[in-house]
Amino acid sequence: MYGLVPEVFFASQGSKWSVDEQRNSLAVTAHPVSDIYIDPACNVVGSGAAPRHDAATFMTPAPGGDFQLSATVNVEFGDTFDAGVLLLRASEKVWAKLCFEYSPDGEPMVVSVVNKGKTSDDANAFVVAGSSVELRISRKDNVYSFHAALEKNRWIFIRAFSFDEITQTTIDQMTVGFMAQSPNGVGCRVEFCNISLSNTSLTHLRDGN
Image (cartoon, rainbow, N blue to C red):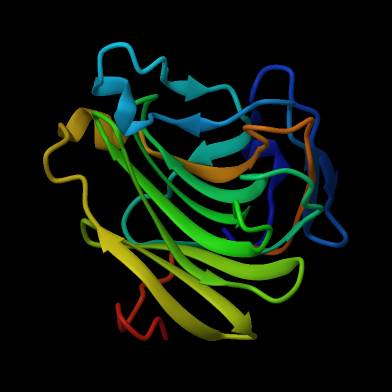
């Protein structure tokens, strides 16, 4: 499968995705005050933190075997943590996301978050000068890797991980796709273009090529 095949994707309840097959693009406005995130503070009694799983998503079952999903992500940033996201998800507690996100310092950044059944492990990668960046999720054997590119096909390694501690049944339920979030804001418009989803194996994990 190459490019975008809308018929095999499923939109989350209440989300309104605009599909342009000729441009191979998707667009959506994030719901106000929406996210997918399990704050580590959820483990702290009295913290007031609660799991979030109400962001707009557009997902399809992950291809069998090795695969890559990539897209150029454009975000009309407004509020802290507004983001356009490539998302892996097996359940509300087993997922990972690669984000183009608005930082607390008011800078667009590449950010990654991995959730392996408990709370979220998130990390900032680097600042992006502009409102778009190319993102990619790859799976090779049982290893997932995240990359980003500021120039066409010059991939920067973000992180690698696996879900070894998760049951195979849960892994078999893995889906992959797109997400828009606005945890602190009124919503932001996100566009994904140059979309590609294929059974392509990543040759070099670290350099991404």
